[in-house]
Image (cartoon, rainbow, N blue to C red; front, side, top):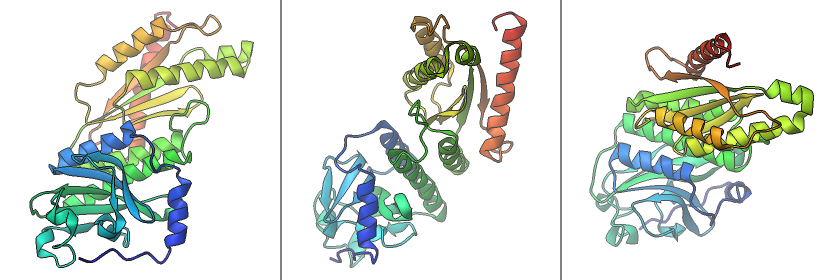
Length: 321
């Protein structure tokens, strides 16, 4: 068995990992959603987000595996973080580095492994997104590219954890955070030939509240609407405050469209308390990804915005606004 080497930048790499303050924390839906999608896309027994600490690999998210960590010295992921490329072992029993590894000879009986390094603060490789199978298999160049795209989503979530791309008031993604996550999702949709849906919202009445009652009251309105969005769209890949009173919800591979979630949102808003006599209401615009038409995430946003402005104009015309 060949234990993984220690990177030359190990001290800085560990500082970057610990700066995230994510080790030994609870599972989080956003990480679990990525590993669930990856396991389904690649049809493997196991998928992990693995973080490589000094003497162990600890799993922030795991699908198909019960243990929370294993020793670094027998880890496959310890090898993965030594390079920028996707690390693939198509048959561990045929590889002299791993054929007598305890993780191969005993549970989880690894035969196939593919891992992509993920980076933390400063660009250091702090862990991996990996897929594992109990039988040998091949992994194409297209598969490697798709795993790299999904690893980019893990990096996005790590950036959220370090508060680099989060709106301070609402704790949602900010515009920069939205663009980072959406860019990776767009690339993933192209490779996986999957659907995505974007919903843009423009909150009503914010300017009037800010002008008459001050920005503190307006902030209450924004925070309340952000909380309702999170409850209404629990499977969204990113919910963002794009700026001012504009919000975005992006859904990768939506199973049943957004209509049910929008109805829930309407009901929750109806039940919510008013803010300074201002009941929560909004205009919205939806756009479904067309990989041939939407070459960038900006083009998808612009289409949703056009529908939003049409909705706002209609609401003005019939006297809702």
